[in-house]
Image 1 (cartoon, rainbow, N blue to C red):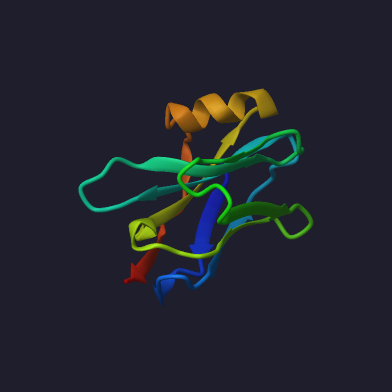
Image 2: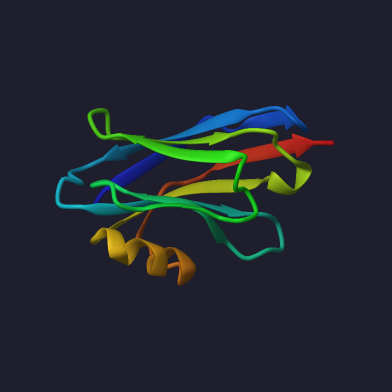
Length: 128
């Protein structure tokens, strides 16, 4: 069981950039899937990026490919989501999620939204 805390959200203009950070509190040395999900009002929650703590897996959803970059700093237990060229449709609550497992478990967990550990979220608003 880990605890997660997101930061870095805000209100920006279209075309701007933001970097979200997720502080991971707990031991993930056994191998964890980490992911960023987002949920806009009236829409289902969707995974937009994922990574495994041991490497070997990195996922970016097609809707943000070429604009978003996911990274992790294992020494600091931080996962970041760098978001470039933001669009109004990127506006949503962004959540950090974690789930113990192997790298091969991460994609199915994103697709099926099976992550068990969640942060409280950070709001991103992109103005046109």
